[in-house]
Image (tube, rainbow, N blue to C red; front, side, top):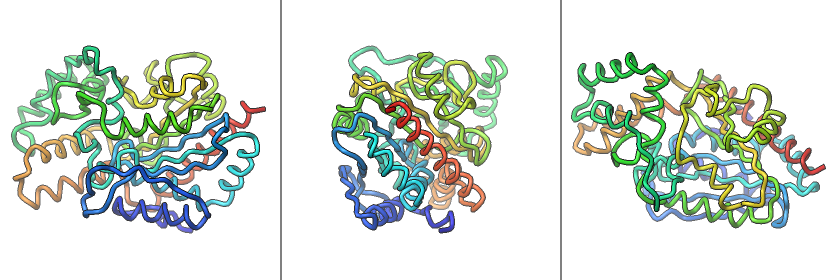
Length: 366
């Protein structure tokens, strides 16, 4: 099967493609229906497939679409795995050793369908896992840049762009990235907004972790993303707490090239409100080992500009249709490189990382 056969152009197509291979294999997927409809009027769902016994004490989670429009890549990897004889054989073997595989298709189906990175609440799901009963994290860097990042008019003015350059010159490019992407909780229409309450996707994911992870003593999580790093290169970013034993275990499973948010080795800035840390709260008995597999698409500045345009468009529904269409295409292309070369790279690395996670759990089971 050619790489393009695993990729789709719309959320509805991606969901139907994935459900079709699930059915072909004689498996059962469970939909968790979203309360809203998609861009084409389709029903939206976070679809769940569990392969393995309910009481399995080792669990591998493979998730896509945390950031909506990034789901084109993740869904394709999930589809390709189920079409792959080697993968299916490896899953069957792992099941005999007490390992289950939990596939979560489209954590944020609304963003996937509407070509947005955020949820229907306008929230970055991977900044939404904070204690909303406590004071929310502050981000003074974002506060200083908010007006320039999502300006009153699009495209941004020379003054808006100069403000961003001045911040980078004063504080450094890494500080600029951290200020923009690290998470903020005060500008509802702004970039990387963490929200003021748990989103539908957050609540649904927590429910699924409790339901499927309660018996697990070992949990591995492969979360699929796009947008950072060199085009087609899958960075393996550690997604647990800053604990030496867990980082060492993750490097043993996924390689010495593993990066972390704690030592400056990752293309990602330090983040707050991280989704993956819900495992510690919902599955406290389990030892957790996880990575985000982050595939590069376009240069960082282009990705940020695409997000700025998309957030401006959300605040300006009166925008001319031609401009609106160009912005939507821009954000999709910022997170999905629609070429055979990129798709081949993604599928090869996705399969390799999934097999490594599965084998890591099997080794722990011995």
